[in-house]
Length: 100
Image (cartoon, rainbow, N blue to C red; front, side, top):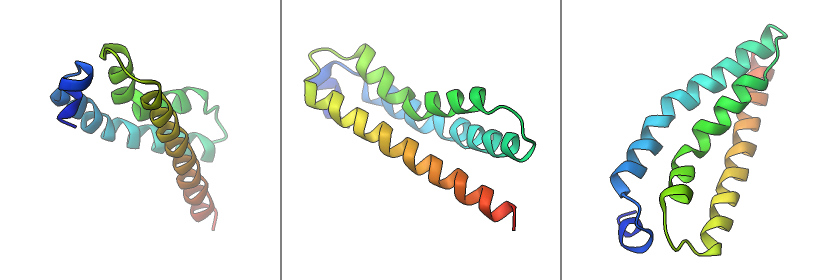
C-alpha cells in the first residue's frame, strides 16, 4: 500500500483511512438492506449506499491517482464485482436465516 504514493501519487494514509473508515458505514448499509427486505420496503437507496461504501477507497485511488495503468482499473473492477457478489451472498444468507 505504501507504493501507492510513489507509483500513483496517492496518499496511502488517506486511502487506508477511507478504506477502514467505510467499514462501519458498509455494515450499516447491509443492515439497512436486510431491514428493508424484512419490511418489504424499497432497497434502492441502501444498495447505492452499500456500493458507495464498498468502492469509496478505490474511487479515491482512481480519481486522485496519476498515471494509473489499465490493469489497476481491471483489478479494481474485479474487487468491486467480488465485493458485490459476497455482499449479495451475505444478505441472502441473513435473509434465509431470519425466515427460519
